[in-house]
Image (cartoon, rainbow, N blue to C red; front, side, top):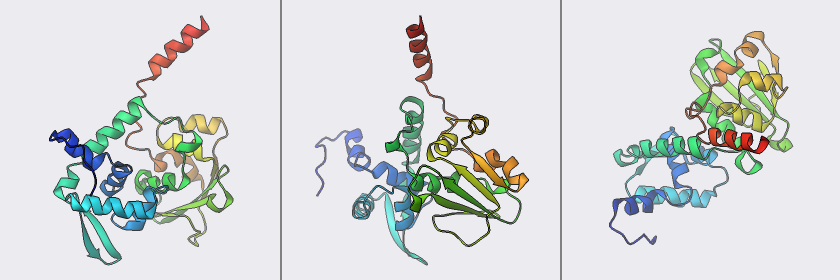
Length: 239
């Protein structure tokens, strides 16, 4: 049995559930719609599968999720208690984006997590009304993880770490940091193109609308609250 904080305070009781390592990120994936174990693990790739299994059992034990049999095996569904955690996770993300946003160092970047996140940011309605395949080539990741494919078929978006067998309509040559910063709102498409950090090859319509269909994280609009202080520090240092 897990050792709690030994306090009756509701903050302490909630922390016994949500303050466990990886649990907020597991909840993020569940709230974003992942229901199967493998999909959940794709959202938290550094997490061991055994620890993910333990955290799911713990969430089930406290009544935040329930496990059901589905067509593809076991599924994890949020209960009313689990769904009520959504504003907590959203507030946590908003605070992080405002006050403690990533510096996009090597320890913060993961190509698997980035591509899995694109399933939520890519806007299929901005693609032509047919199957469209986009191949991403990342110059700064190991060879076996360098190529990824986004397949949009009308309203469905699939992220493929292996070649799906469709001829790409668009090739995107870039690096991991550029696309991550672009999706998170820390870099504009115009600036990335001007710096030569993105090269596009393919159909003109897809190249022209790249920034539109790629989309942004729903935290991207939140400004960095630390920027004014940093600007003042730079000005003071220059005087």
